Image (cartoon, one colour):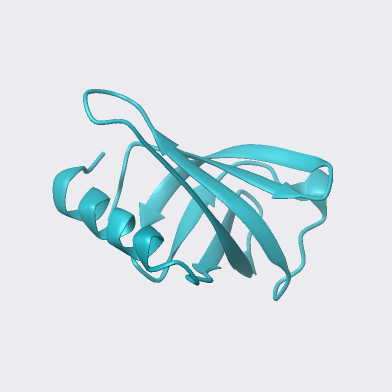
Length: 97
């Protein structure tokens, strides 16, 4: 589902901020240039999903890189904290871009 949000990808000292194109309980797809990070499918990174407006949110979770394309990257959530899943469900129920 489209959601008005950004995602910050971090791995060690490297950080990139992308625009979220699609969000689901299973993961997310974001648009932007991640080439400088040299991400590899299967690796784990830390994601910080944030949205502003009348109902801001800020979610931090580990995720696995699933697919990399020329201008986007897809991640699968590694939901070890049930509260993160609950927060994502609330976002999906109340916000869309």
